[in-house]
Length: 166
Image 1: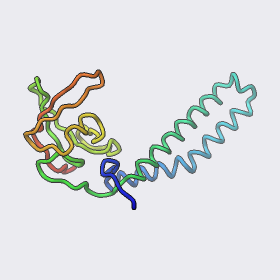
Image 2: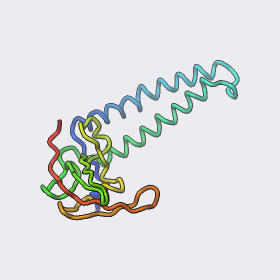
Image 3: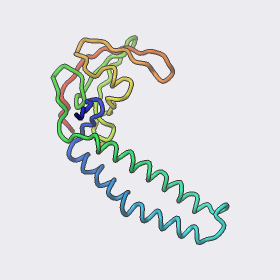
Image 4: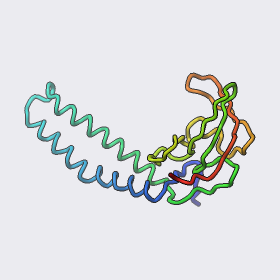
């Protein structure tokens, strides 16, 4: 029996999925060939210990391989389409407005995968500390999460509406 975990799912638009798939195809095909050729050309220049071009190409190769793994993980857990949404309940694909406790300022953002770049508003990941704390909360509820410095922050959910795009 296979069990899928909803918190592992990355909801992507078809456009974002296609863009990430194209990037993966390029990096794992022509991108790998190109970097291998650069490494080989630098290797032919001689002493590898003092060959800056060789070391730079090897470092870039490591970054490409890391990005390939990252893209494979995203696409493996991706679902194309719209995340299930209920108006007034925070979830992926929702435009969320929160107020930070002790601050009069309101912040509005899209709760979605960071790979959904191009949104005209800030994008917060559902896996971020804030995103995880507010996911599933209703308008009017409060959520507390831990900041990177170890302190806690509380927010009140002021709004949660389906993202309408640009």
